[in-house]
Length: 135
Ligand SMILES: [Zn+2]
Image (cartoon, rainbow, N blue to C red; front, side):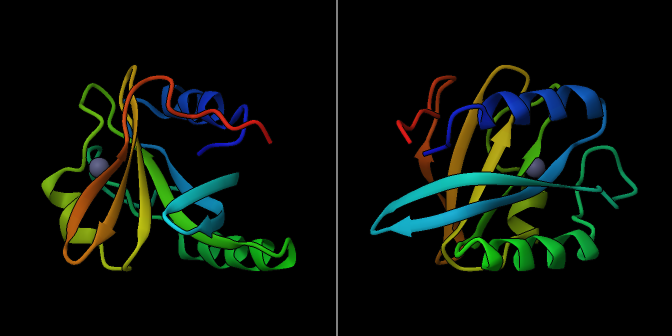
């Protein structure tokens, strides 16, 4: 679940970065099999190619520190697929490594969330309106 406003914020970042991919980290917590995203940590994309993303390590460490201070954790990442589809690419699979890490992907209209577990991406949520939480 995404806290209110976060989906719009990701879409705005994706639009601003296009045709390059935007990227960042998801701060929140896990409640059983439900992942709650409470804040975003936008990060610079260090990838040379337009259809790749590589989160700036300094931004990554800063996000981990900020999440800890808030009593939360970095539970996942997000990036965009300008002109593409909201599902992981072969490059995403290759770049994934952390177990039980949420991958949120924003395509032009769609936003979808996946969980990397056991060497594969499981679908957590899809659809334009996945993203509401009453908190
Ligand atoms: Zn991707």
